[in-house]
Length: 359
Image (cartoon, rainbow, N blue to C red; front, side, top):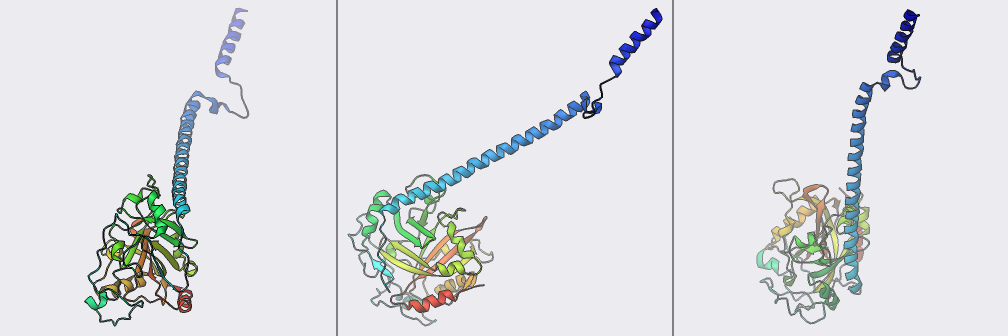
């Protein structure tokens, strides 16, 4: 009896150590302590990956919300001024409307170009060999009808809100924004009311003096992805030129005059000397001779995405809109226009616009 009992006890003890219940769904190998330790490490990696993805998602969402919030804030800032701005009444066959108000007591007297004042309302057609003083007589040194540099009454309430405002830029269905001037950095990070905002505002180049009736006016602005500021200008890069044909005119209402310009070139240019399509548009506020002027206009036409027959002559004041182009910090999208001439044939001009083709 004792021997048999011992064998039974031995078998019971052995069975309690070696025998495990068999689960058809979870075999013994997958429930072993070694596997559980290994599986715990694998799960930890998954959990860490999920946490990292969650953090990235949350940060991206915060950045997106902040980005859209900045744009909304900038739009509200512009809207506050737009309520005060009264655009000039359109007039037929007249490209400019002089301001009628008292002169600004703060701004100094004009420093005019040292040339003979133009008395003719028409733009003379000059021969290609005209240079020097003869070339400069084609350009006005005062605003026609506003020789005393009176500030338009339209800007009085606006300048009470922000003294930096100098113009209002409009492209129907594309841009409707105030333009400021201080330096070339402040309005990269401040909105129309002067509040800190990375969306910024449109601003006149610091070297462009409206009191001298510049040959070229240069306006900068951010290329926002949602179309704010100059973000909508990239629509002019459509290959078939359809957007250009539908939006060929720019209206610029400044402190001293109201004028309409017709776009004749849209180009991606480089700001680094020696690079392809290098075009130093930022320091051309005047031209000393026909050769420089002709070379400048011909070059931007060569780089332009469109081929147009719109001519540019000495005496045609230029308007250039510049913004970043894509992710390349060396590239700028440039939209260049010239002022409409008094009594210009609008039918012929329209035909030239609609005949534009993409290169």
